[in-house]
Length: 296
Image 1 (cartoon, rainbow, N blue to C red):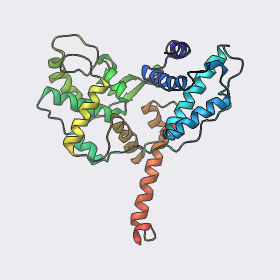
Image 2 (cartoon, rainbow, N blue to C red):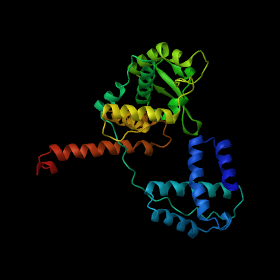
Image 3 (cartoon, rainbow, N blue to C red):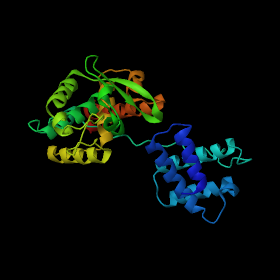
Image 4 (tube, rainbow, N blue to C red):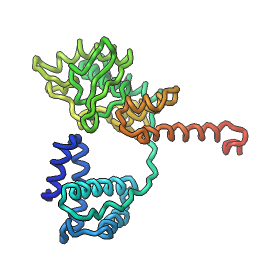
C-alpha cells in the first residue's frame, strides 16, 4: 500500500473511528487512483490531473455511483493531507461530486418476505438459527455486518429491543417485534446451546463450528433459501433492509423514525425509499386510472 494511503487509513481508523468496511472501500478507491498516477508524485497532481482520472473511469464504463464514490474518497484523502499541512493547495477542493441518479433498491413484496422467513426447516438446529437471523434482519433493518456482530448481552428480550453498533461506531437501539422475539427465544433455548458446544462465545449467531457467523457465511445461507423459495427478484443481505424500510413507509411510518431505526446520519439517504413508493404509485396509477397508460 502507498505510504500516504496507509497513513490516511490509520487516520480513518484511529481518529475518525470508521468501520473496517468503510476504510477498505476508501483504500480500494485510492489504490486505483495511485496506480493510475504511478509515474507521478501525488503531491504534484493538479485539479486537471484528477479530472482526467475521473474521465478514465467513465471510459472504463464504471457506473456514475462508483465514479462519485471514487471522487468522494479522493476529496477526503486530499482534505486530510491539506489539513495535516502536507499540502499548501488542495487540488481536489473545487471538484464537485456529480449529482447522481441513485439506483432504486430491489424491494421484496411482503408475500416474498413471508416465503423467505418461513423457508428454514425449524425442526433442525440450523433451521432455527437461520430463521432467527432472517427474522431479526427483517424486524430491525440492520446491516448484515451489524447482525453478525450482535452479542448476547446486546439483546433485551423483556424490553423488546436490541443494541447495535453501526457505521462510524455509532450505537443505536432498535426495536424487535413480537414474532422475531419468539423465534429468537426458540433459537436461544433449542439451537444456540447445541451450536456453542460448551464454548463461551459472545456473538449471538454461531456457525456449526461454534464460531461467530460471518457476512460471507450469511450471504451463502441467504442465497440458498432464495433459490429454495424460487424468488425471482435479485436478493442480497441488504434486500431485507430495503424491505424493512419500504414496508414501514408503505404502512404510514414517518421518515424520521425510519431514519433513526436504519442508523442513517443523513435523512437524504433514507429518502430513496420514498422514491420506491413514488415509482409504485405511478405504476398503480398507470394501471388503474381511466386515463393512465394501461387504459390504451
